Length: 87
Image 1 (cartoon, rainbow, N blue to C red):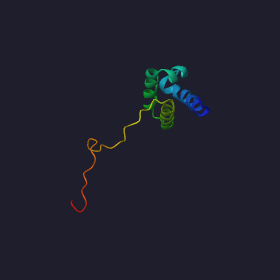
Image 2: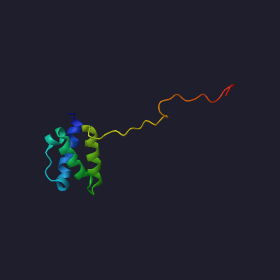
Image 3: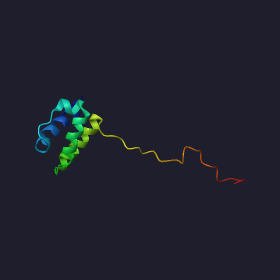
Image 4: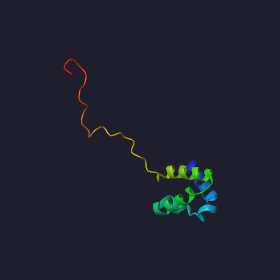
């Protein structure tokens, strides 16, 4: 774990105690089910800073799923040539 991730983890644990209770850092890093429960509690907070820290930590730990951003190109068929002399 790099230093930035460790600092972020520490901030989330300290600031998140009021919202989620005691947070076990080892389980948060290794157990995805536990981490999901804790992150859901933290993201329901009124503290925007805590929500932002929670999302950043989630991204660093790899718990955020990337949305598919590839556009649908019509089933993978090549586009029909529309312009030209015979067109």
